[in-house]
Structure formats: structure tokens, C-alpha cells
Picture: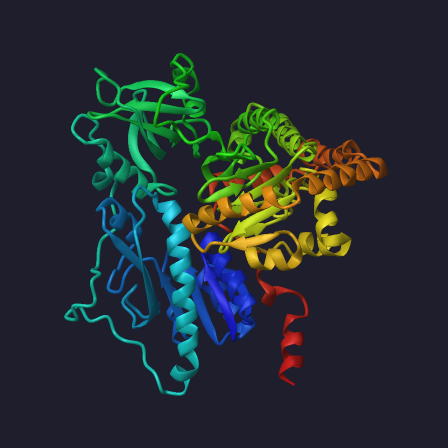
Length: 576
């Protein structure tokens, strides 16, 4: 089918649908929901059989849904209507939830249901994590089911069912937007569980409006902390790196990120960076358990496998995170293991340099330079690990420099459902580093590397494996992937490991003789220096709009195929 995806932004769910539906054989183009006239123009240009609205913040214009069948992907169970559907479900502590694909009509979320899929709500999961994982997987299932109904619907052999609230199977109900009053925290009376549920339900957007150090801000990235005897609830009692620990009536909560409206940089930042002066005097709680998620290391029972896990919020790796992880890699290299497995976070392996930290720096250009060199040092530490095999285990998505960080390992294993974006150009024509000019061609060849960088499209784990970027794909859920990871790592450690290590070391030595890693790095950084310090401000402008979440004013042409020169002629020729 020819399908036009209409979306507010190219978010994680839209990327997954885009990549999977193209793999299913559909012809897709994307239009950002900027204005009714723009959407109408996109429909006229692309002439889709169907419009799929994957992520919207306003209604589809009637001029579109009356002309072309339009399906809405709603992150709620059948009957659920209104915004913040997932927020309500998580804050109320419901056991399960779902995704409904319904036909657009005059009343929002009230159209007939084409398909739906349900899932259990993961205990302790944030809204953002649930959306990227369970919601996205359920949405793909429901969209595929809806598309399967399309031929019968066109032929009059099948009809979607109306949302009848008299039907006991319709469990959802209309709801109003969730207000900040409904999200409000009472540190004196609420339990840790209640506070976490409220912050989790607002994570990603809009956050929970509260105060920290007496200043108004929105809270994100909350995790359970240890019990703090005799601490007044609401008091900030310490920090761990850039997270601050706040006492509750029965334990404590780590707050990793905040957004201050009164700040010079009114976007989401690590808490101790947004409140730098106030946090400077807090004690560093290195041994507090449960700890704020960061970096951990363990070994298999036989000591042959080291598992180095890191979990950075939204996959962003600033200079401090890169330096800590590089130190952890060096420490792991001092251990007598034969395989080193690096596992990223539940939602993200890595998305490369930390654009928020950079935007907030006194000199964004200087911090960009420090950050790119810090992540290059991390890649180099992996590339120079020649006395054992290294594995990048992608539980979650990867983007930009995070993709090439993974390629610095000998093998890349990815969860089925992970999406990779191995390119940089969307961030203001950024050239990129992380030794990508060495790592990408050695896996996919020069032509393959040029194609990936030119297309700038998301790749599913399976498509990435077909292209040569990924070596193994397994486990449809994070839990299944982790179970398989242990088994595959044990197999790797037992299968002629010494021969593989020797071959790896010889190959790296030959590559170094042909062209040293320092030469690749110098060439990449020369281009990056122009991005950071040159006359073209594109990178700085793009970064600013990214962290400020500025609404899109146009759809990138690599997504909006219908706006490419010659598209109409191509379509007319195909019709002939």
C-alpha cells in the first residue's frame, strides 16, 4: 500500500513503524503535522491509499479524513479517549494497558476501532520507557492487523467496530487532560512508591512541577533510593554524580534530571548541573543502595566473561559519562576475562554526545570538542582491547555516535525491535567522529557506508543485520534478550576463543599498519572542528532547536519523499 505517515515528530514509535512497514513492502512517505494546509498538500502530492497518524498533538483536518481513510494510533485501550492516556494508566497503577488503532472522525479518539493490542504494564517503568517498548511493540502489532483488514474494508466485506460504552469489553473511558494539580507531590505524606508513580507518569513530558532547593522546576528521571534515618521528607541529603537524593517519609528518591523555567537554560538538564551552586556542597553518596543507575560490573561464575553495564538517561553521554565509562573499560581490561560484554540501558544503548550539556555550557563549541574527544577515547579503549573479545549488547535503541560506539566492539548483538540511526547529518550537517570512517566501511564496505549516511533512515535490528551492522538479533523483549545474552556470551567464551582473539589482534595490527587509528581520528576531528568553530552555524542552530524542542517548520526531504523533485513524474510513470 501507499501510506502517508502523519506525525508531530519522527519519534521512536514513528521510526519503528516507518522501518517495519517499509520492510513489509509498503510504500511510505512522512509529513510532519505543521498546519492543515501542509497536510492537505502532502495528501495531494503523495495520493496515499491511507493516512496513518502515529503521533499527533491535534486533530487531523476533516478535509483529509473525509477524503482518505485515516487511522489514528492511540496509546490507550479501546474506549479510552483524551490526552495523557498513558499518564493516567501509570499514575493509577493499572495492571495492563494497550494501543488502539481507530478511524479518524469529527470527535477525537471516538472513531470505529480497526485493531487493538494489549500488554501488562511493567512495574516501576516510566511513561517514556513504556512508550518506547510496550506501546511501540503493541502499536506495530495493531497497525499490521489494521492494514490486513484494509482490502476487505475496501471491498465491503469487513467493518471496524464502534466504541460502544454499553459493551463490557470496552473498558476505557473518556478523560480530561491531566493537570499539574493531579500530579502534585506531597513529600511529607506520600510514600516513595506514590512519588515515583507520579514522576514516572510524567517522565519524558511534561515532568512534575515541584520545587528543589526552594526553586520551581519540573522533575524527571526518578529512581528509588535508600532509607535515610531521621531525614525530613523533601530534604535533599546528597548526590551521586549529577543526581540528587531527596528524602521521603519512608525512604528516598533519586532525581536525575530537572527543567528550570527560571534558568538561563530552560530545558531538561542533570539535576546537579541545573542546580550547580546548590549541589556543590552536597555529600557524594558513592555507596548508597539502591543507587542511581550509572555503571556496574560483574563476572560470570567461571570468570571468563565480564559484563559491563551502563545506563545513561535518554542515552546521552556527556564528557563525565564518557570519562567514567572509559575508566570502567580500562578497569575491566585489567581482569583476566576472555569476553567483555557491554550492555547499555533498557531504552537506549547510546545516542552519542550530550547535546543538553553542550547547550548549557559557557562555550558550547568548547564543550562539544571536549565531549567528542571523550567519546573518541572510549571508542579507542575498546578498539585497543586486543587480548579478549568485546560485545556490544543493545537492549535499547542507538543513534548517531552511539551506533559507532557499538561498532567499536568485535560483535554487535541487538534485541529484536531495536532501532538504529547510524548517521549524524540531521544534526546540522554534523560530520561525526567515533572512528566511524574506519568502523563503518570495514563492516559494510565503502558503498554501503555511503548509502547509510546518505539515506539517514532508521534501521530495525534485522535490517541492520542484513546490512552487516549487527551480528546477532534475538529476544523480542529486554528480558528475553538478557536471557539470551548470557547464553550467547557463554557460547562465545567457549568456542575456540584463543584462536579468535589471536586473529583479532593480528587483524588490528594489520589495519594499524595500513592506516593508524590516529589518522582516522585526526581526519574526523578536523571536520568536526569546522562544525564546532567554523563559519557555518548549522550544528549550533540544530542543537539549540533540538534541546528546546522547537516545533518543526518543515519535514526533512529524506522523509517526505513526495516533496522530492521528480516525485510526481516517477509516480505517473509507475501508473503508466
